Amino acid sequence: KPGVGVLLLRRPVPVIPAYVVGTDSPWRNLFRRGHMRVVFGRPWVLPQEESSSDSDRGARARRIAEALLEEIRRLKEGEAPSGDGSPG
Image 1 (tube, rainbow, N blue to C red):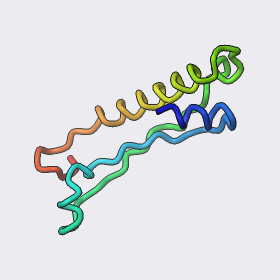
Image 2 (image 1 turned 180 degrees about the vertical axis):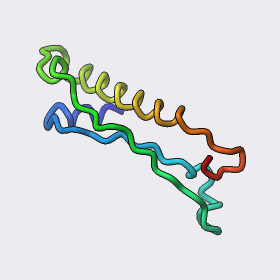
Image 3 (image 1 turned 45 degrees about the vertical axis):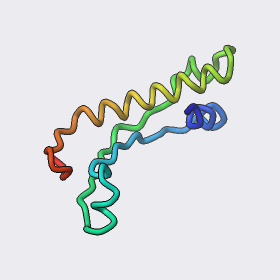
Image 4 (image 1 turned 60 degrees about the horizontal axis):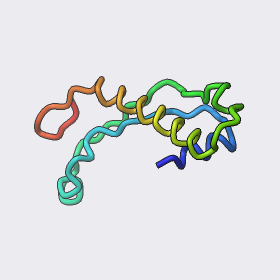
C-alpha cells in the first residue's frame, strides 16, 4: 500500500527500513518465547526528483512505497535463517 509514500510526500524525512526475522509462527511466540531479530538498513531519503515531480500524486506515492519495499527485500535476502524458524 502506498501509505508510506503519501507520508513521505507530505514530510520528506529519512526513513530507516527494517526487516523482522522470527515472526513466522505466531503460535510459537504465543505459547513459548520465540527468537526474533530486527535487521535495520541504512537511512533512506526520498529522491529529490520524486519530491518535486509534477506527476500524479498517487503514482508517486506507489513508486516511493515500492522503492522502500525493495530496500526491505534486500535486507531479507541478506538473511540466512535456518529451517526451524530461529534466526540464522
